[in-house]
Image 1 (cartoon, each protein chain N blue to C red):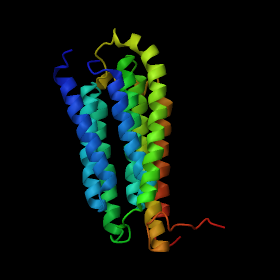
Image 2: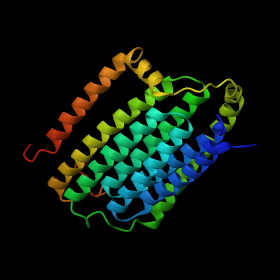
Image 3: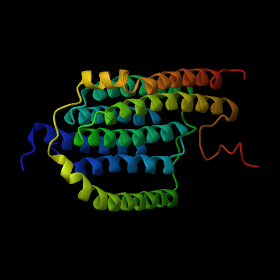
Image 4: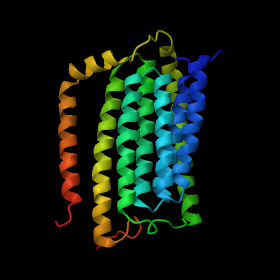
Length: 101
Length: 169
C-alpha cells in the first residue's frame, strides 16, 4: 500500500464526521438520508483499506453487501419521507412527533 | 518517500471528497446537496481505484451515482421545496460539532493505540489483488448464502418502498 493506512483512516473518519454533523444539524429529511449515505461510504473506505492492507478479499465482499444494504435503506427511507409528506405536509424531521405520547 | 501517481491521486481525491461532503451538509437547497453528493461519490470511487478495488469503484458509480442519487432527485422533485429550507440554529450546530469533535478524539485515540501497534507489521507483504475475478469468485462460492440473502433483502426493500409510498394505505 503506497498511502499509509493512517491517512486512509483519517480520511474516512473525516467523511464520517461530516455525515454525523449533517445528521445532527440538518432538519430536511432528505439531507439527513444523504448524510447517512456519507457515513456508509466512510465505512466502506475502511473496509477496502483493510482489505488491501491484509490482502484479504473479504473486505471488498462486505463492502458490496454494505452498498446493497444502503440501496435498500435509501429506497425505504425515501418512501417513508414521501409517506410523511403526504400525511403531515412536511419533511422537517423536528416537526415529526407522531410517536410522542 | 515517493508517493507515485496512485498516492497523489489518493490525496487529491480525498481532499475533494471531504470538501464536497461538507458542501452536501451545508448547502440549503437539496438539489445542490444532491449534486455535491454525486461528486463525493465519484471521488470516493476514484479512491477505491487507487486502492485497486476496481469492482467496488464500478459498483459505486453504478449504484450510488447512478441509482441512489437519481432516487434522491426524484423525491426532491416530488416533495415541493420551501418546506425544508430554513436556517439552522447556531447553538444546535455548535453542539453537533462539539459532539463530532468528541467522537473524532475518541476514534483517533483508538487508532493511535491499536492501529499503530498491530497494523504496521502487515504493511509489507501486500500483493496486488482486488480484481473483479477474485471478488466474483469469493462472492459466488464462499459468500453465496449472504449473496442470496442480500437479494431477498433488496426484494423486501422494494416491496416495502412500494407499500409505504402507495397513495391509499
